[in-house]
Image 1 (cartoon, rainbow over the protein chains, first blue to last red):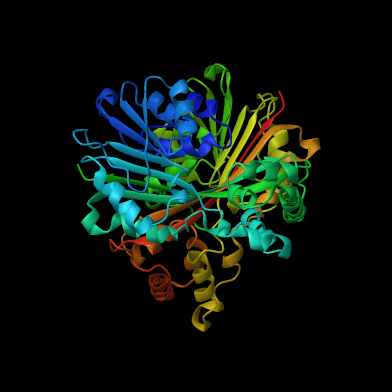
Image 2 (image 1 turned 45 degrees about the horizontal axis):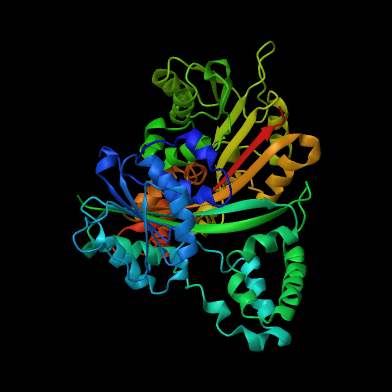
Length: 268
Length: 268
């Protein structure tokens, strides 16, 4: 493994990009000239993770895949040197005639896609020999932040609007199950490394925690509601967050945020 | 307790050095010329963590502190460019006339020292302005690996020999308590970052897990026993480990190993 590059690392000390950098730091692609590599950022969003890939693998052919046109446009503006195309994580494969990827990198994306038992082996099978599959996903379904969303969704005034809001995100498997999917002998993996990091983000207030989650986990809950109920939902949720995340010695709230990391390399 | 065995400890160097490197990667000392820095490795062991410090901070004055002469000798052989002196983590302070350290780095050492409520603020107070305290410690007291040691120690044939074996290692506080110790306004910290990483080490067998733990957590249990009971203790422990860590798809056992990380920087 390459050692960490502190200067690069600290440039992305920001809460959401830190896991992306920590995932990349564990990708054991060394020795190859970077310009010969084919790298895929699966679920690239606005390109902030893709930027890490472009910096680490100078001159590589980097392809970003996302199903949001808004995200793809932002990514293209950020990184004109990379290619960005629309696609679905669940079914993506290299276009006919294109090289098999040396790295499939999926940062905070496959939790929106179901069927990990099929998806993970499929992604591994798409790699070139010696290629690496690197995945990070939030594993916070059992944290107070997420339990309390589901609790509020069950209140009588909201429950009839909720539909499948609690099920938009796929179930995360136990970490040993991911290891099994990657390390089973028929997968031909040379190495498999799985771990959790539980970050503790100091947040200014309960409202700041709610704000953070509005961009991701809360989205399907709030979007299911008529406009006039959204504020009520958020207020009920914020009261519970306030109680579940007490103020620390400096007045901040520590938001525990477990993330699951998977890195597997195919045999050369 | 008997002195440490550097060879046994280093048999798992890769697994043990990864957390040391990940801790160092989060130390936000950038911009200063490294040669002007004073760096202390508190509980340096055989010098494998010190080596990371020497590499990252070229030309810095690096001092390793340990209370094991065997470890200090191994460290001196490994790194003639650093200074190694005998000392106790609980009471260590820079010698009179020496500079306050810019970095106090304690990798897998303070779990052997009690009184973290006093120790942590004391270490922070020893730093130069802008200095960094960086700590990593195993937090596996509630893992099956460690629960089962205590369970076996309670068996009738062992219990009378055990004394305080279960208490050699200090209690680890909840992570929020460490945050409070570091972030309380009177500490004058500019930033505090705390997190857990739960590594999953693929081990060849239950026996390999026992072997790994003989170098650290099992030491006080086994050493308390007369020679003729040690093998019996280890066999009883290994049977329980075998049941608690089932074989994965590739036949390996995944040893979950939670580690707690603390990084705080003083105001400049």
